[in-house]
Amino acid sequence: MSDRVPSYYAVIPASVRYDQGLRPNAKLLYGELSALAVAEGYCWATNGYFAQLFALSAKTVAELIRQLADRGHIRVEVVRDPETNEVQARKIWITGPPGAAVTPSPEKSGEGSPEKSGEAPPKNPTENNTSINNPSNIPPKAPQGGRRSREPKKTPDWKPERFTGFWAYYPRGENKQAAIRAWDKLRPSDELIDTMAQALRRQVASEDWQQGIGIPYASTWINQRRWEDEDKPRPAAGRSAPREEAVTYGWR
Image (cartoon, rainbow, N blue to C red; front, side, top):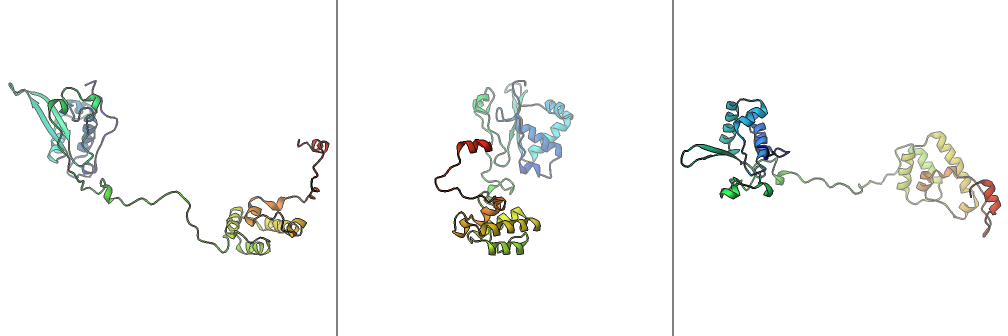
């Protein structure tokens, strides 16, 4: 048996898992049968092998296999010598709903496999009557990803009355929804709002803003913390800082 390694995964379909006529160990044994059947399409192991594997008696294993066969989950085939009628091998085929039966691996289909002997595993039903395994009974999954639709908000959740005053005073009226989101994200305290108001009054009175130059969207003003901007005179057109002045301030 050393060259017949069971599959890493065991398959236990819903029809077996929820069969109340099966003992729990019978369901566990079914999973091992499905794992061992991957190599050649049927399970070849003896009762003694399973008894040692699961610490059961050979008699208990025989009862579990008979129970699985009686419930229609497996089919047991005994191979006998045509002259002496002596048992030579036993093949256990996985039956049941679609997906329960396993197909032998091509590279492991050797002597004794169904392809070599001319035998074939039993056909599965074309339909699965268990709602768990039937994709047609599974509700469609809700689409994921993409942007969620947002309902327009008139005011933010955070200090809406203070935002109303800010928005009424701000010189640009575009993209209010973005401004509301930026305000809710910042969640400014009353002290910070007062600081923002003082800076905004100063900027609104500036020469550039009076001429409509350089006024950002309200959301940009909030997100970039533009109330922290410093007041500096604009350089004359075409004038740049002398090199020695730049070196003095240490930024070049």
